Amino acid sequence: MAVLTGLSPPISSSLITSPSSLPSTSNYLNNDERNWHFLPKKFSKCSRFSPISAAVRKRKAERAQSILYSMQPQPQTNPTSSNSPGSGVSWIRNEPSIHDKFNGHGQNEGPLHSVFPTTSAQVSSVEDLYEFICAGPLIEKVGLNPEKVGESIDEWVLCGSHLCRLFQLDELFLTEPQKIRIYHYYIPVFMWCEQEISRHNSQFKDKDDVPPLVIGFSAPQGCGKTTLVFALDFLFSISGRKTATVSIDDFYLTAENQAKLRESNPGNALLEYRGNAGSHDLSLSVETLTELNKLTKEGMKMKLPRYDKSAYNGRGDRADPSKWPEAEGPLVAVLFEGWMLGFKPVPVEIVKAVDPQLEVINKNLEAYYNAWDKFIKSWIVIKIQDPSCVYEWRLQAEIAMRADGKTGLSDEEVLDFVSRYLPAYKAYLPTLYAEGPNGSDPNHLLVVEIDEGRNPILGS
Image 1 (cartoon, rainbow, N blue to C red):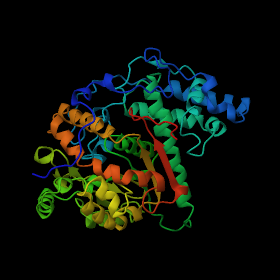
Image 2: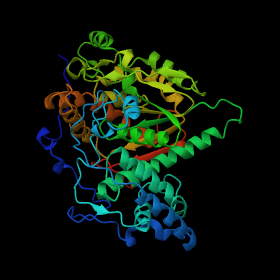
Image 3: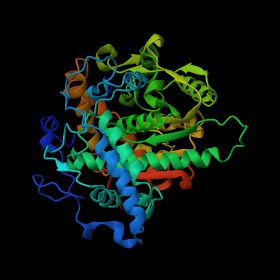
Image 4: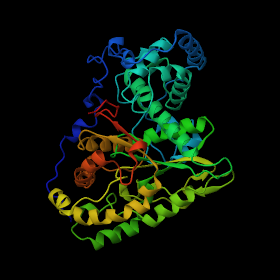
């Protein structure tokens, strides 16, 4: 049995199962979780910009207010019950097309309201919502300011309403963390993606076939990247634009080939199971991403590979092709996500200092740029403060999978499983955060730093 060197879980598994153990979002909110409220104006960034004209604000606010109150609140449903196959997200069961599209991607973070305080704060007016949006940490990063927010406030309200319907939330009585996730995170990132797609499309002439923009999402396991991509895909879909979602997990080796990899690397715990560089079918990656780039017209279709993480008692295997979802053109974007997307090889002495078993992983990484990263033209990097959070997040996902009736890893197996990823995080995240993903253009890179509650923060 291969042995990991020098790794031990930083937390007790008993702490992971309790929502109350999660940190509060005190970077934005009153530290007293019993008294959630909108940020006072003195904390708003709006004062650093010239306000929009009163007439424009009034007109936009009136239109947005009508949107806000025109959609009836959705009834709250039991977040833990779902009979839908393939996904652990019970709150998407009323969206079968989206559900099918994400089949196999392991949506196990749970509903937005599952791990947060339940005290609600009424969205009393569009003006309050405007102030709340402007206080978000991503506004400047995505090229917006209070004036632009005011001019597009009706779009913000409409997107918020769509996401509340998707996640089965009452848009008029969101908890503060729910508001943060929607208006400080998902919608700003969506608007940045729209800008990137517009820039990409402008490079082609009117009669040209415009290939979809491949947007890469590099983020550690369990931090919410799949749920973010799920929300973005839904917002594009609801506006009549087609996207395809792909994960690096979709390209894992079959169980049979993973066994061969393990046998050819005896004693290397990092290649014993799926995860690290070397455990992916790179030819399948190239084939899939190349064919997706060709989906430029109506009627063009292709099957997207998916991986079944619940197979073989949680060790996983490629899903049967009959269960693969279908992508149909014309696509405006391909949303490509993964925990090690954008990792680049580092000097051998660095990986040896972290864990000697990483040396072969580092060598394997040399082939990944041509298989993955060169297809990506715009990047979103979700930056975490401490990789040890992955333990907690992954265990939450497995607990949700088991609650949904699927076979998942035990708590002890999760700790063992995640330990096989931590050396790569330690070796490659510093370079990713300092230099950006492999081959990325800094002009088309959005870095979103999140806290342990998976919410965006200003960062350093």
